[in-house]
Length: 149
Image (cartoon, rainbow, N blue to C red; front, side):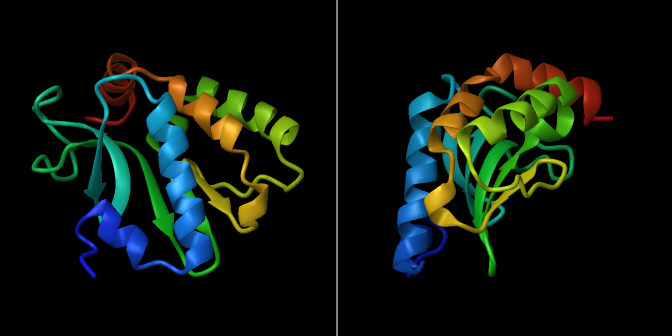
C-alpha cells in the first residue's frame, strides 16, 4: 500500500478509522476556503498553502508548503491538527466555547491538536465551521505575525 498518497494512507487503515478519516477530510474539503491544497504532508493527509501562493514555505523546512490542517491516525485516537488554533487565541477560544454545544464528550486537546477517541462522537458540523474560519490570507498574516520569526 502506498502511504505517500492520501488514498494509500486511507486504504492502509482499519475500517472504522478509514471511515472516520475520510469523513474528516471530506467535511474540511467541502468547507475550507479556496487556495488551500489537499496533500500528504509530514505523512498525514493535510491542507496546506502551496508554494505557488506562499513561496517561502514552512519556516521549519521551507521545501515544505505552509501547513494548516492535518489529520493523523494515532494508536489511541484520531487527531486533527489545526495550526490556526495554535496561533490565534480568538479562534481557539471560539472553538472551546462551541465544542460542548456540538459534542457530549469532553474536549481532548493540546495547543492546536484535537484528539478524538470516540469516533461516533466527532462533531463534523463544528469541524466544517472551523474549516471556514480562516482564509489563505488570514492564515499567512497570522503565521507571519505569530510563528515565523
